[in-house]
Image (cartoon, rainbow, N blue to C red; front, side, top):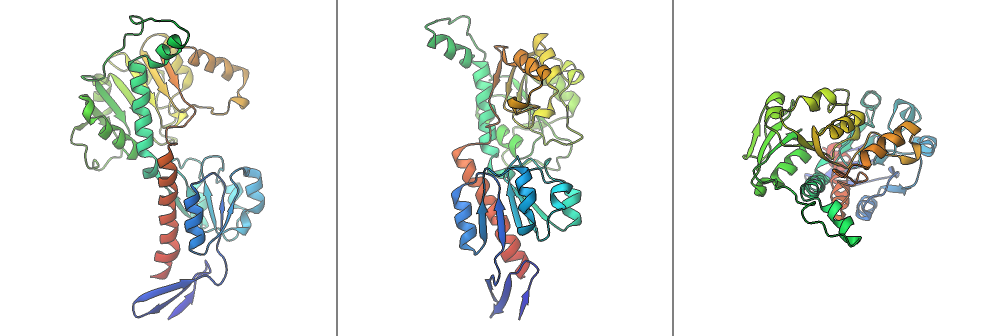
Length: 341
């Protein structure tokens, strides 16, 4: 028994075993840098791969109609406008977790499958968040810069221990859960709030689930692990920060627009926030800053109690492979499992 499927995969069965070949190539456009193993694995299954890591959104729009699959990272916005040019697109695969760049109404009405790989870099993000926290607690960036200038200020750089502190986690998905697991040996108390959590993942017996108001009462150190959507945009605003009982340290490795930057700066300057470790920002393209944005970020970056990095929390050597491998397994399942049942 055999059938030609819309994606041009031919399946036939002999004694309960499916055999598959592609009489016509399934074409996949990869628009960002990926681990080379992903390309090798996909080509090994017979897919035709065009790897254009420097391609622009405008250029993708001009050629997308030729492809059955699209693999993106963050620069390609999958909008109604982009998809209006498609003819044969069957899937969009997102390296990483952020899905705010994909118009799900547009993909759904065209029956385009959407994948992502949040498990691929959750450990890298969690370790980076802990790194930001420890650097803040021990004033490592300040001390590093001073020592390299032959300045030896031990008392000025006296830090604090995170042991015994209460760490509040907002969002206990893949990254929030990994962050909590990695903190288990630091002798901290961990409280977490997640509006949509049905049950905790394994290995989180040390985490206490609380309501948002209780988290605000208990927290010394706050870490955001939220997706960006209409509900979470500017979740961290002035009223939110002012409602905490204690002065807090803030870590954000999720999305920049989770926090309203002006309100963050205001609360740093009035000492409600005594330190901030930030890997993400509202605007992550310095070349596009307005005059007002440039002045705003100067105020933020000039504060000694602020440590920043250029959205690299999920960018480890290991995560590059894991992100790609997870997407490969999903694409393989779509074409070689789901289509040939």
